[in-house]
Length: 103
Image (cartoon, rainbow, N blue to C red):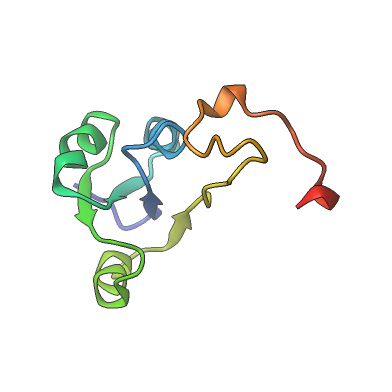
């Protein structure tokens, strides 16, 4: 149950390796977390990672995203990066830091 003072946060990609770490940290701050995943198969993983509820939507579906955003105070979203070697799905802890001027 959400209290009136709780920040309600949409965490995009809660089934993934990066955003999946966020719900547990937000719970420590007493936030209410709505996870956003792009397929039904990822819903259980998002709930296990600490989401209070899960929305299912493709980011390209404006109506579904608008519905997921309804009542939300803040959004956590880290856009995926494509590394020079093409390793888009690497473990985030293995990704080397790249100077901003290289983007």
